[in-house]
Amino acid sequence: MSEAMRAPMSAGSGNPALSESFFETHLTPAGAGARTMSVVGVSIKTAIFLVFVVVGGSWGWASATRTVPLELGRGYADATVTIPGGFWLASLGAFFLAIMITVAPRRASVLGILYALAEGFVLGAISAAFDAQTEGIVGAAVLSTLCVFLVSLVLYVTRIVRPTQKLAFAVIAGMGGLMLLYFVMFVMSIFNWSWLYSDSFRTIGLVITIISVALAALSLVLDFGAIEMGVESGAPKELEWYMAFSLMVTLIWLYITLLKLIALLTRNR
Image (cartoon, rainbow, N blue to C red):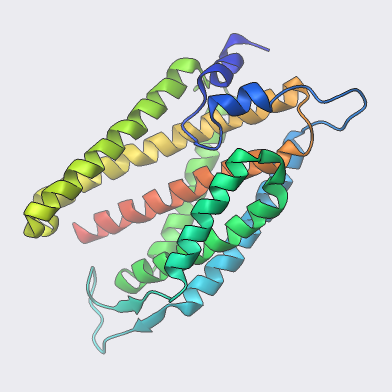
């Protein structure tokens, strides 16, 4: 295994599901005669998870009550939705399920499906709210997510971008910086609520969201590297579910970020 492939194992990745402790504890060779991980297996399980995300998303979308005015304009505040009553319950459920899966990766097969349903419900309600404000934004975000995924995969396969330790550190540091910046903006909004609707806030939000998209794309490269390491090291086949879960988490993050980016671009027109 090359040094470039070993690096993420020792440094972790931008994905919280692929921490350093996971690489040290779980990504070890399976016993003699045991079935091992494969790229095809991870791909199939990722597709299964995404199907359940779509099912949960359809449920969340249908549960959001839309109020459409007679005269539809473009941009924000032209339509409203009522967030479903189970929105916060599903959010908390997805959060705790993610923690349980991270603590016990070998339970990712069942808990991952429950997480996909809960997180899908949340995404469906959020997507309905965005779509009510800007028609067609959800389709654009889904297509953009697919495009970014494919570009990241090509960059990884061609080794134009390598999952090195420096890249992992840059992604983790970037995520930490973004969290700090979000906190500062939250504090500023408390003391100056009108700032949230200013051109300065929209400009800063646009820059931050673009950076978030770049970090999510680079995190996909690290996910690809982790999957390849698992395959090359002969990790147990049951860990395919966990690898698929980690990839799903990154894709969900990327989708939400692109949804916000497209909304900001539409709002600034």
